[in-house]
Length: 286
Image (cartoon, rainbow, N blue to C red; front, side):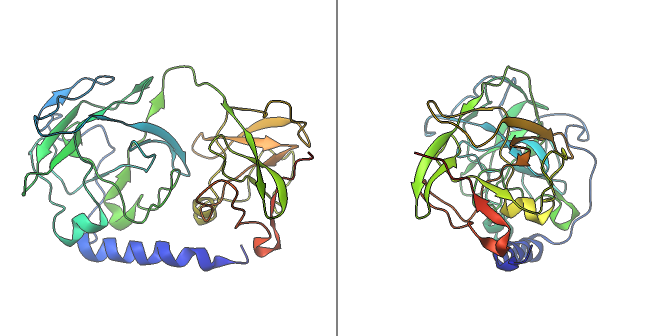
C-alpha cells in the first residue's frame, strides 16, 4: 500500500488499549473457559436474555465478516471481544477505569443473532455504578474504541489477551442486493448499504486470491458473499466468490475481489478512489 496514512488512528487506539489494560497473556480458545459456567442471568442461544426493569429494549446482535473471519457483533455491526484476564463465571470484569474507555462494555439486554449458534449462553453482570454488561459463557463482552465501522477487528490479539468471538451461521444466508450510487466521479457500484465498492489493481483477476490482507484488509474490508446484482443494472463482468484465509467468502467482479473503504461513512462518498494509484471505484453506465 502506497498511502499508509490511514494506519495512524489504529496505532493510537492500540497504544491506548495496551496502556490501559497491560499486556496480559494469551488464554485458551474462546468457548472453553475454566468451569464453563455463566455469570449473571442466562439465556440459551437464539433467545433474548431477560431484561431488568430499568433496561431498554433488547438490541439484536449481528454476525459480521472481518479479516479474522465471521464474528459476533453489536446491533450496530461493531465487532465484539472477550478478555482472557477475566475469570468466567465470577460475575466481575477486571477491565475498569481507563481500560473500560478503550474497551467499552456491551450493555445488556441483547438478543442472539437469528440463525446463529452462539458458543455459549448469554448472561449479564452488574458493573460498579450499576451498568449491566452482557456475558457469553461467563465472559464479559466488550467493544473496542479502535473499531469505527462494521467489519473491522483491530482489537483482535491486542496484548495477547483480547479476542474476537468467532461464530458459525447455521441458517441459510440471503443474498444482499447491491446498489448503484452517484458520487463525484459518476455512477458507481455500491454495497446493499449504499457504500461505494472498489477493486485493487494489485490483485490478479481470476487468481482466486486477494493481495489485500492483514492491516490492508482492515482499511479495505472485503465485500462478503453472497450478493445479487442491482435490478436493471448491467455489470461490467460476472459476479463470483473467492475464499479468503480463515474461510471468509469475498465477492468478485470480473475476477477482481471487491472491497469497501473504511474512510467512506455514507452513501455517495468515494474517498478511496485513486489511493496509492491502485484503488478504483467500479463505474456503472447509466
